[in-house]
Length: 436
Image (cartoon, rainbow, N blue to C red; front, side, top):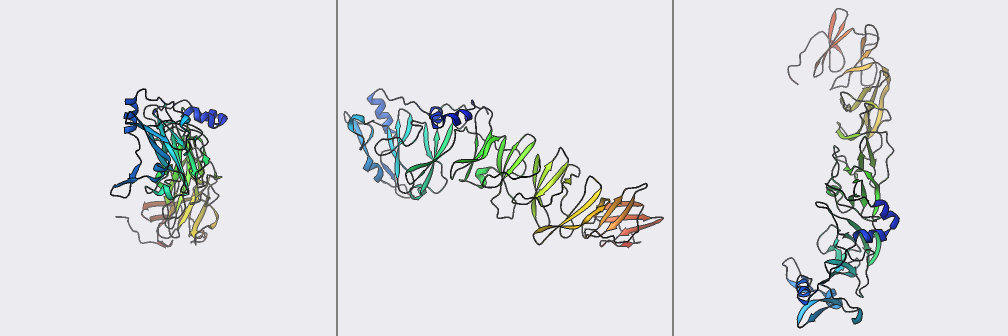
């Protein structure tokens, strides 16, 4: 997709004058009566559907404010009744538009351009003539007539092939202009290629909008309630992610090469360690976010609100963040200093299972959480500890380990081989993992 020249700084500097220039439309009035008649034939004639069956009834707002204009007995357009005759302009169409709280404006069409005006012909938009004015609120047709506030989308000319835009938003409340987007935007279908994300409009439909500037395609998030850019336009992609099974509104994200930022639903940036990849993970009793720093080869774990579950950085295992396992559930990992940490999710809170232990995790039994740790030395030694971090066999150490998978682990003590039982005990009876 191509991008037009970036106007964001110009729009901020010029305010709405800059937007009026960028979004403006120059009317090309019809030159003949025949052309006026042809244009009026396509215009709004003052009737609207009465119900789902499509029966047409007179539009009361239109009838009170608009009159037909005829020349030589031919309908050539429409005019606003309250505009003095000397100043009256003949439009190809005049259609009422709800502006909240039972107030109405009128979308007047002239020479291929549109303008939102009041019943006296005064423009209600700083942009003046534009290419398109449309309702942007999502809801049941006709709801805008009853709503106290409505959102309008203003579209300009000059969009490149395949683009939607340029466009901006305005909000009217009880007939008054109460909010304006800070700049114009260009259309984009790109959101993000990040994992575990969903497009904004799919999940917060009618509340947030992914927006983009021209040329460099910087993206951000616009809150439609008050038309504030709650995520600034300086990212490559934006979207939303949330954890299944929670009642949270979800977390907003914004990514650019080598860095991802998370924001709460109000657009507040969450203070988190650096990460360049994020995934939703599923534990035995909880779902959580894995914030992965591929450069440092570590990850952090966060809950649905973006708060860290534990402060420690968890080393990646074969490029992935280790998950919760065993009863509890439990997260067990070995840090860069060779110490093993254990955390459990108990009664809705993350708690330490034991103080850091000397030795690196070699095996964690899936059923009980029993650990086999490797102590550094020449030769190395192995110890068996329970889920609480206590040695299950006192000072006994083992010289060799064979992990056959599926919880079948053997240890050698001198010339004697032992099979570890599911509870961490030792048995001379050997079992084999035929299937698991």
